[in-house]
Length: 141
Image 1: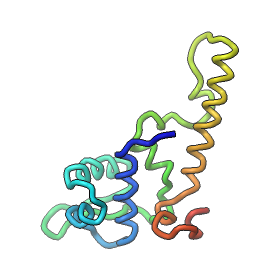
Image 2 (image 1 turned 30 degrees about the vertical axis):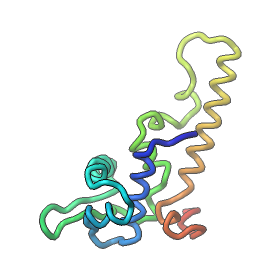
Image 3 (image 1 turned 60 degrees about the vertical axis):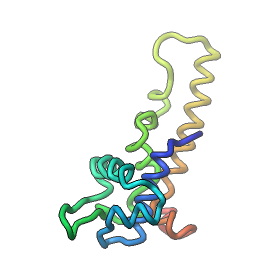
Image 4 (image 1 turned 45 degrees about the vertical axis):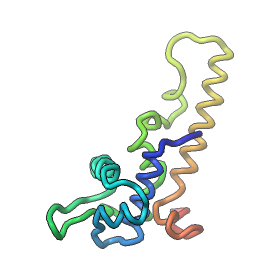
């Protein structure tokens, strides 16, 4: 299962914000620490704000910070917010093909659906806090 670079960038931005939580972080500092361009970070912040993961404050003393605790943001939630192809991942019925299909196609849909569901469940068990403190209790939270 491959994730886009944007998903990885979003997780790196959130991890940076988690390391500095609850302080505000400047986009320039995030860019320097993560090696992501400021332009990409601004795009990501828009999506992360829409999803409710970060809050922004404008102005010379502004910046970005997590809108909730690092332990309450799950990696799977972030992936769904950034990658539309994973938004419907949930019940197997949502993954299955529509219309009449052959028994082989039906079983293939079920197998792929189970694999995607297992992948997303694993990501849903990992929090942003666990990314900055591997093996922490936040991983199971």
